[in-house]
Length: 185
Image 1 (cartoon, rainbow, N blue to C red):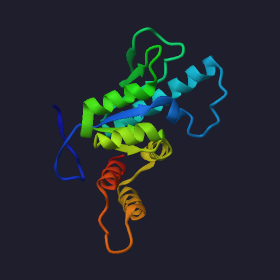
Image 2: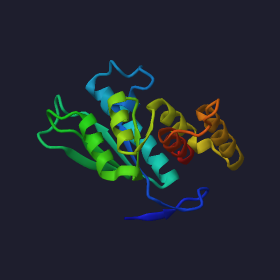
Image 3: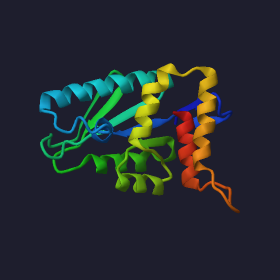
């Protein structure tokens, strides 16, 4: 296993692997739903470029999974572009199943980026942090603009949304994982 020193967290941590539901992230703004195959290919490449820049900035491993179950290959297709591992599921297998398998294999050393409820519930049962696609997209797009002072303030604001009122002020394990994952992003 690879260990890295996480600045700002004060202890050793396993290297982080982002497992991204590719089409889910692409369709966050819903304007890409009616694309022809050439336009979709161009949008996938643009997303890979963004993920590559983000991965280099954060020094994280990134795997993005796309559906190939309706018109793909007979075996799972894997390739690496600009430091991002790209997986297309095989014919008859949805990307959801690939993402679940990767989350199970990687465990707590991963973060899953999806807004799919079924994948989210499965990953949470595996103690894997889940970040909704829209939140991740916003973090990724703003990552290059972060400065030392503004980043800490943003983390404090994120934490406020998960605090509870009443007798029990402790966060659930699920909420703690999400808050920790959001701070790392």
